[in-house]
Image (cartoon, one colour):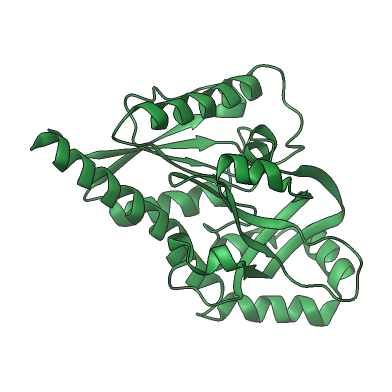
Length: 275
């Protein structure tokens, strides 16, 4: 039996070169002795992998409104998620999926778990993320403090969880937005365990300091952040980037945890079936 594990990266960046993709590939390459990967341009070319040929799926972030598509790639994307769900119901060797940011919002919408709304203003920067009671024991977060730090970049948010749907689907909210005592807004959902094999984060677990600083090369982006947060908070954010226990730690923990869990599960079941 071929032991090579194949990863499909579902590119939701709308054809734009993106630092996030570089970060994801960098993390996958840490496992290059056992995995290979292929990138599929979902929004640009409506490319989708054959689910029989890939074991693990990472669906990236991307720009724009998660509630809108072109009536082609978005419908195919939802059908694709459904086919992976059906596969996991019927087959012994499961498909593991990580949904990031835009993909996470689309998955929450598709599974009917919560409302997706436009934020009052853009959330961008290094943010505190709090684990829920369920999240404290979720293997995705193993090795991270509570709260931990992550790069957030979004105009939309997942809020108002439909708890009856969470119970029906056995899904769990595993992290929430930072506590903001000074405002009356509901805290957004930052990560969901959809099932034993599907998990998603609103934040960018792939981000590293290099990718974040690349975003700041745009004077317009810098000014927008300073306008939103003030100069002192902007300076604090830059310091957070260099702290080994913040963005570095999240980059080194979440996607590697996801991949290790998936690889171990796949190898265990392959071994069982080959005996």
